[in-house]
Amino acid sequence: MPTIKERDKEAIWHPYTAIKAWPEAIAIVKGQGVHLIDEDGNSYIDAISSWWVNLHGHAHPYIAGRVSEQVATLEHCMFAGFTHEPAVQLAERLLEILPAGMKKIFYSDNGSTAVEVALKMVLQYWNNRGIKKNKILALQNAYHGDTFGAMAVSGRSVFTEAFTDFLFEVDFIPSPAGGNGDNAVAVLERYLQNGDVAAFIVEPLVQGSAGMQMYDADTLEILFQLCKKYRALIIADEVMTGFGRTGPLFACDYIHTSPDIICLSKGLTGGAMPMGVTAVTQDIFDAFYGDADKMLYHGHSYTANPTICAAALASLDLLLLDSCTEDRRRIIRSHAAFAETIRDHSLVADVRQMGTIIAIEIVTDTPSYHNNLRDVMYRFFLGKKIIMRPLGNIIYILPPYCITDNELGYIYKCINELLQLLAS
Ligand SMILES: Cc1ncc(COP(=O)(O)O)c(C=O)c1O
Image 1 (cartoon, helix red, strand yellow):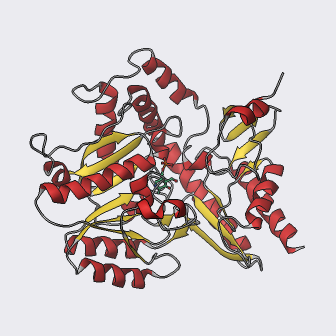
Image 2 (cartoon, protein in one colour):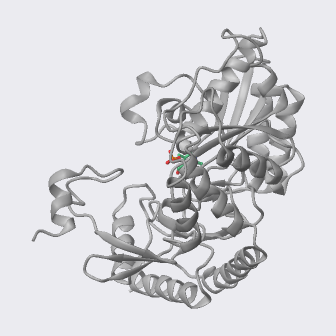
Image 3 (cartoon, rainbow, N blue to C red):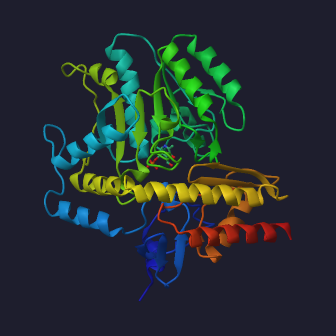
């Protein structure tokens, strides 16, 4: 009997995978808590929450139960002209916990589409209001997804290179990360003064794919205040930071000024199923009030799928338990203590933390996404039965909140072993 891995090789094209360098995928047959178990019985700690989606552990029985109930009651129905309890309840509950000012929820399928929808909304918002503003601003090194609009507002890199000619024009302001906040603020204001900025899109506090680059809440506050002053809309892309990753439920909770639009996905369903949300203020929604000439021309076949809404509702139940808040606090304390033990290591260029996310930048001569060190580190951790996906020379832990102190301790120990190995 061929293994899953062997059959996969015949039939599947994997995402973000160099086909020559990575001819084989590890076949996972079961998820349990923080662990993923492969077809040979190896159990791996999922230190990065399976591409940052998982909040409460894999195959969580409570989420599984709610999903199975829903799929047997109403599995799907189209969402134009129809609605259902799971979608309404999820919208109500999200609006309760989102930063102030969010009044309507638009559903889609993933993080990229949540961003795509936000971009279409801001452009049509100004169009519907009869005001000519069509410039989009984004941060250098941003990552907002892989569809064309999302790529356009992402930093130009190897990810977007082949599509450059087809990406709409965006002006990039310097990333505020690495103590560069004042510069980012100054450049943003210069662009805003032109009066043609439709929107500024930003990953609040942590630019994930750029290598968990972090910046302070005071800078975010000033960037947002400037946008308000010059009447440019703010899109906060909380696809990665949402649902507790930075400590509070949303990164925007660190500041007082609210964005106009918030994009969510990943942790929205606890990592069980794909879903995107674009949350907006009443002002944005009102700009689309009218007949067909005013409506938003956007929708997906599976918009607000009830089964997925049930997963999201179940995940919210778990997220809002006091024990989950305490778990996040425990992870934050644990990371902070570990950071101090390695900060002065000669091979550690930087160690930074934002809530439950810790990133360690390893000294290297070639700090690119595709450097050799990345592969060495990836394989090293796999050998230790830990799933890590370094971003170039940067390793990071972004764990499901159910990870235990022992499991965290084991990951820290392996990071120390890696540092020893690289130093030798
Ligand atoms: C901030 C941010 N926005 C958008 C996306 C795209 O999400 P998806 O992969 O679900 O399309 C990502 C994915 O990593 C992300 O980190």
